[in-house]
Picture 1 (cartoon, rainbow, N blue to C red):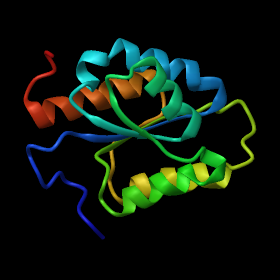
Picture 2 (cartoon, one colour):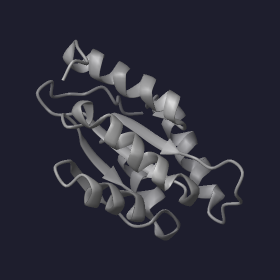
Picture 3 (cartoon, one colour):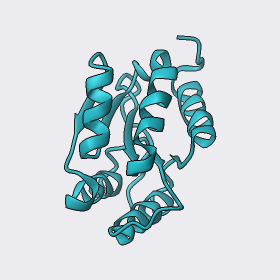
Length: 142
C-alpha cells in the first residue's frame, strides 16, 4: 500500500470535491465560504460538481472529471489508490436513492484503506480542511 503523505512540501494540497445532486448547492456555498483557505489548494471534482465550482470560482485550480455515474467516482478512486490526493470532501445525500451507490461505497472504502482524510458534511469538511491547512502551513489565517 502506498503512503498518501505529501512528498513535496512546496506542492499545494490536492483535494477531490464531490456532491450528490441534492448537495451540489451546499458544496458550492461551502467552497465560497472557505475561498481564502481553498485558494492554496488544487482540486478535482466529479463532472457537474467540478463544473459548477469552476464556474462560480474561476480563480480556483479545479479540474472537472467525468460525472460520478459515468466514471468520475472511479477516476477519484484511482487517484486515491495512486497517492495523488490529500483529501476528499464528499457531500452525501443519505436520504435519496443513488443508482451508483456501489461507486460511492468504493470511494468510502478506498479513503479508509489509504487513510485519506474524508468529510461527508459541512461540519466535517470544516474540520478536515482546517486540519489539513494547519498541518501543511502551520496556520489557517489566509
